[in-house]
Image (spheres, one colour):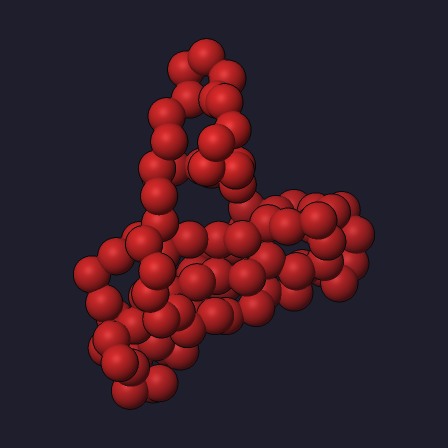
Length: 92
């Protein structure tokens, strides 16, 4: 597991951080709407649904590349209705 934060290409990094670039790709995006309760059980259930049901049912082929969760400025884990977007690379 890797956690990341967006930085400008010319931006400096804090000590202990390394720069990783996510290559341009086509992604299927699955939006997870949270209910304001504990984050981990909700994300665990969402991942099981995404990888166990939605991806296989979509007919899409998962591409070689990183999948990632986007927690942006809308994210507030204790606020019902906040969202997390799960990006899955797909072959076109």
